[in-house]
Length: 231
Image (cartoon, rainbow, N blue to C red; front, top):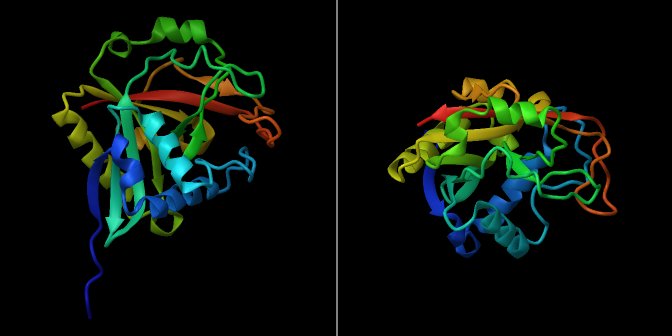
């Protein structure tokens, strides 16, 4: 009996995403991962991680990761089944000047395939006081768009893709990695992956938030935290 093929993990510059032959399949994997939330009902079913048009979606994710961003892609033969991206850390307060369609302060970020964080920061002043010095210096990256296709979860892929991503960042000289995450959704996951939660560096995305005029709003509050991991 033939052995099942082992997944291959590659690192791709974010700027090259639209040109990849497997992009359309990865686009589907990302949106499918976002739709499958393992019982978390805060996000309306009409919300998707990326636009439905593959070209527009590739450009959106490329722009989100920026010119220095990278993405680790897990290929099973030639089919992408998971990914994790990283971009230079934008600081603890990078979202403060953004405005959502619903009028809340905040911008959209993604962790573990989920739409994280346009935030109404509760206790933001305390978060600024509690932020370690490392958060104000260079050398850090933040994780973005980590997702595992529902059919390939619980087999250790998240550890593998994160390790490959971390190795690539170390070679670039990165000193630390940050994660922003919804506590109700992935709050148990990130500490297991080696991230230390930063006290008070989080916020609450209130029920009723909508990122696009005319779309459904959040069905319940989401509480966010920030984790840090030395590389």
